[in-house]
Image (spheres, rainbow over the protein chains, first blue to last red):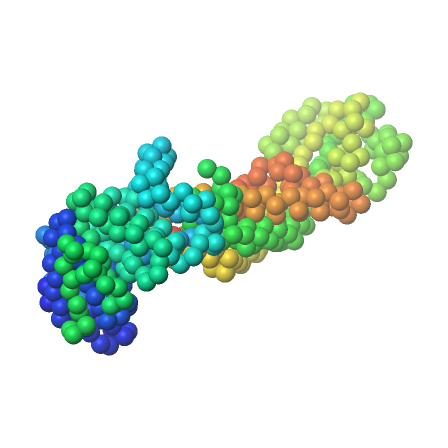
Amino acid sequence: MLLFDLVQIPIDNQLKYTNKFSFNLKASSIVVLETRSLHVSHKIADLSSLNFFQYSGKIKLFDKDIKFLRHNERENYKNKISIGGGKNILFHNMSIVNNIVLPLRIKSMSEKALNMRFEELILWLNLKNIIYKEVRNLNEDEIHLLQIIRAIITNPKLLILIKPFSINSNYNQTILKLINGLISYKTSILILDNFDYNYQGILKKAEIIKLYSSV
Amino acid sequence: MKLFNKYDIWPIARFNNYQFGLLSTAILTMSAILGFLYLIGDNLNIRPKIIVAISQNHTEQNINSIIQLFDKYEVKHDYKIIPETEISKLLIGFENRDSISKYLSNNENYTLPIFIEFNYKSYSQLNIENILQEIVFHKYILNNSLGLMNMFIYSIYFIFLLLGLSFCNIFSLKLDKKAIIIMKNYGADKNLLMSILFRRITHNTLLGFFIGWLFIFILLHILYITASTSSNTIQFINLKNINSFFYFMSLLIMVLASQYIIISKIVSKYMRITIE
């Protein structure tokens, strides 16, 4: 699904590079990549979602080297990948519903199908108390959860989550439920974090790779 | 889908991103109209003239009877009887030169017609056609085509207009960079973004244009009541002649096209991916 082989990524305005690192995310599995800084996590997320191409080494996505993807292949693969959290902020001037279904509208899904998908998700995760709020009134944990929901609404093959859990969040259980549910739907999940959370305890099937010694 | 909905479904087409754009389109339209009126005001208001040619073959139609008629209707200073020596010069300016040539040359028992010149405004305001209803006459409108100098001034004017448009667009059309990048991350291509933005651009341009035109329309009509504006200017702003319609259409297309080009360039810039 996603292979990083001896990859180096530029940091600090491209003057410095990370050390070489590798991981292999197989289909329907979870890899937790613990990096030293959130900046590196974002770069890895951007590389994996084909939004950034400055690196050395080899990156394979769906068994193809991303350097040699044609334009239509790249667009096709991008549709199969979603990023939850990070820079994909919620828009304050849109309702929560419109924020969440935005990726589906971009994919020209009909309003009926889109509403069905949204209601299905909200019922499954029991989020009725959040969706009627205004974006500006949400707390950080709620925003984070909604960012993840927006990422999964398209049923991605590869889901990249940046710092999905936070200590003292009321929604950790909801996110955990969501991750386990997605694994059973054959989604591969890459979690990027920076040592804040004990993944070993909650995600038993996950392969945890610590990059603090190399990155 | 409502375009002004507070919770617009597309983040990049939010109204608050464009309020300033709308205002600048309106201001630009106003200045474009005022600039046009300032530049060709003389042509609109003074140069177009109506020449009435009255045959003297009929017994009642001679200079004295016509002057009496005008006196009766109090047309005192708004006409000028053209002397015979200047008649040949008139031929150059007539819209339908052939008909007056025939008129001058084909009449048997040839008697030179009386040529009376009216200002376009006074002709319509004094209702000359009604005054001369008992008299056989031909009406000619002087051709007010543009001279080379006018064309040069127009070119300069349009260059300034284009520059003004570019500056207006650059400063007013502030696109939400984050929204474009996020939409791109979720798979939106340039065509989708441009189609969403195009609705906003069109709406903005039309609304701004209408506000600008309406403002000048009201202003000129107020001035017209106080007799400071000629009927030609009013006809221009009322879109009653084909030239003004053409002018407004080209102005609208210019505003629309310049906004589209600038937005297209900004969107391309935000969507560019560097592959290294």
